[in-house]
Length: 465
Image (cartoon, rainbow, N blue to C red; front, side):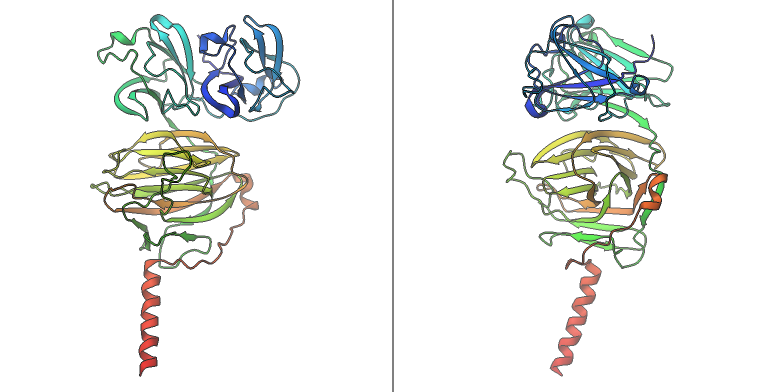
């Protein structure tokens, strides 16, 4: 059986604006009721798959009735937030989905697919099915998750078109947000498919008890190879591209000989809270930011103490309503030292993925941007990179990137150490890169504050005498 290489990937949603129950369609589906969507699709996104270039005229064909009958709507790659719209007038009528060539189409690309996971409601691959291509933190998530929590009884795993050369594994979790007991299923490069027809027969008895799914594999990230900015924090002077942001003055940073330390006190955080109004959180965490445009990769290395006092990492910042965090959590935190990747859009928090790496002595973090797609990676050695997660956020061409440190809730004060910060571009884009000098601000480093205070005291004593 050949490796599954989809030409188009259709992401369907129960409600308008890509909300509600969500599912994927990669192959002809004669009855959408089989994937939990019988006449209840209201918005969808169509992505170019890895094999799209072989048929550039491909489109998703949506049919009113089962078995590809009735009224038809052909959609090329793109985002369709409301197919109730008069231009389509097709919402809540889709009963089957097929694929075929029509005219030239353009649109967004999905990105890499290391593995394809098919989950079935009943044993022996019967009942309703969902297809998983990326990490899902909560199978009951009302803001875009599926309805499959605690209902998976059999599983098929296929090698994807971007399967890592060293193999990969899928981890199934008992509880949402990658918590509870875990079921590891590994696939080696020599395998193309694995089947578990009855999860109830496993020693862990994992049938009807899966709430989150993670796909883990070592990835090689070689698109952004040319380093255009490198700060190893040698000396006491802040580079002109940097801007230090510390809203309440509770944080601090110090440039040592070859590394940067950021200190935070309990309560300093960077989120709007759990409520939709976004008023119960804290946005006072300190961060060191610089401006950059278009696509890029950013990278840092962190030294991890035995006490796991570190809590911070990389930050991509548009404004308070649009930012991404890839970070190492501290030992006392609920994630107990794991890497986590999260998105904050319109004052709503979303956990993209949880990346492990709890017991490493040094940690490399990397974020890559391609248009509105952001990919996170982590590594214990800076050579073998593991994909942490992928998300899409509309931020515009110019954003700020940099480092941040946190001390969420009532955990003890954190001390996070960064060895360097690097910015990469594609080889073809290096000649166009120009550094952006930050506007001068009042915030300064601790050492600069000490020097300024000493100067003020000397001037005061001189005036007295």
